[in-house]
Image 1 (cartoon, helix red, strand yellow):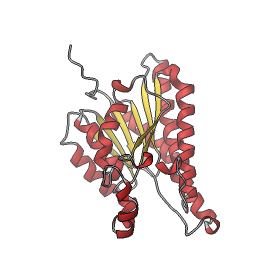
Image 2 (cartoon, rainbow, N blue to C red; image 1 turned 90 degrees about the vertical axis):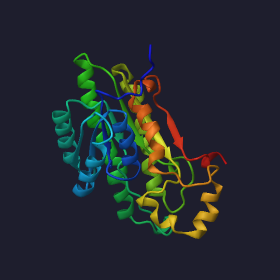
Image 3 (cartoon, rainbow, N blue to C red; image 1 turned 30 degrees about the horizontal axis):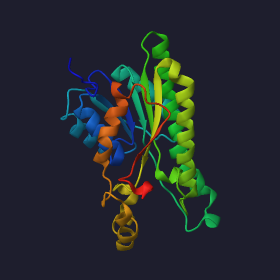
Image 4 (cartoon, helix red, strand yellow; image 1 turned 135 degrees about the vertical axis):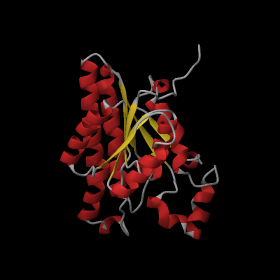
Length: 261
């Protein structure tokens, strides 16, 4: 018998922030594995470009919605529309995020704190809650099983000076997912966190152009390079697939070895 758990045909994955960066890298691999993909993003043009690209990669359907995850009602409505149009949600990747820091902790203002919380924690909470609600309802109707994933950060487990607000959101996300994993395992739901290291995305654009950062930080990455969005394709397919059926409540670090060196 052929072992083919990584074929995602018939499965629908929701990826927030899926029109660029890590989210797009994950969505590419899911689509190429014949999974259907629902992309949520705030920019309609970027959404359309992503749908056009992903639609050429596999046999699954690709659709997009213009959604600001910091708006609770928008998340509720988009979840209902996604299920209505695509039939179901099997996997949810709460990836949309922002990163606002400050010159130092004591000068970090409440607005900076709130901006991080609104997207990274509130938005992830609403996104995960609504997807879990759908999967629980489906399980009660006799069709159990699903995977929810939060894209956290090494900042959640390491000291992130001048970025305490961002780090707090990512630490909170990990705790949220562990709670989901324990409470909802009875419905076949597994919940895991991905912790990226230094990844070349729009969020790290300024650092990518810094000789000092390259020499003092990236040189310490054992892989000797920046990570790329496509480095998250394999782990996304794994977590969306039946291959990860017994993996839940874990934190999966993807950092080229940076955190252990």
